[in-house]
Length: 333
Ligand code: PBG
Image (tube, rainbow, N blue to C red; front, side):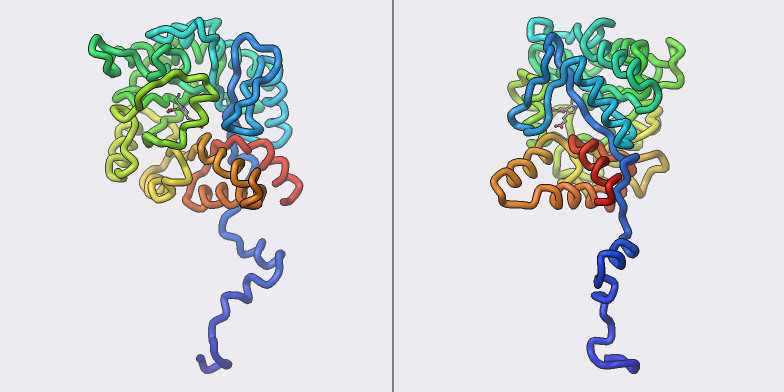
């Protein structure tokens, strides 16, 4: 009760009465330019190969990747994050295909750059798991453990071949200590001061990467718990973040997104560089699977997950729905 009227005195529902009113007072907006499309390209195929655990997502052929890049540009998407899927026979213990100038990722970078030039920010995953026969993100020591410093040497070479191929941004995602610094040095050494680093600063060891393993045909047995972070920890993220910034990260990323919105909000509060979030394969698959069963409204669920990630302060969002959502936003949905 207040002195101006009857109970209840405050009626927040007034600001929810019409679509126009709700649009006006919306605190969070999605924009195509905030979206980045992760895309897989597979060596040796002429047709795209569907990924069963990610309905609607494919392993592109070189040709369809170029088309997907053009489509993304037309929809207003800002960037594309490329992942290479080499032929099985090309995988080995040290991930040679990842540093081959003619390896699939490097070829894809050149293709996309030739197709869309600077109209799209071309980013590349800088990690060994797509190229190693054991599926780990680094090289192994004699005891079978991921060898941090030997892996850094491989990352330095990867950064250079990716930069030579014409990438705008590299995304070191292997969670090795010192990776950002080593990659920065490697780029600067060959005169690629302009190539930026999107650091996977905060990357958790997550069950939601499951479908991605199919997407890149990873043969990993075991897990990545000795290098990726424990989902229980937040303070550790802030430490990882500080180290990556000190080593030269231009942008930082939190991954996965949905189950880590608190981390995302804390990270965004504590840095002055652009912050990205990666809505990963399992987050995508959950919505698609439930929608396929008719248990949720697919389009509304997609927008709600992305709005939540924006609200938690991500500037950029990597999402497999990037092009579709950008097209819908352009139509005012
Ligand atoms: C590492 C990498 C992974 C993803 C992106 N980069 C896999 C992992 O860390 O296990 C996962 C992306 C997704 O699940 O959508 N190269």
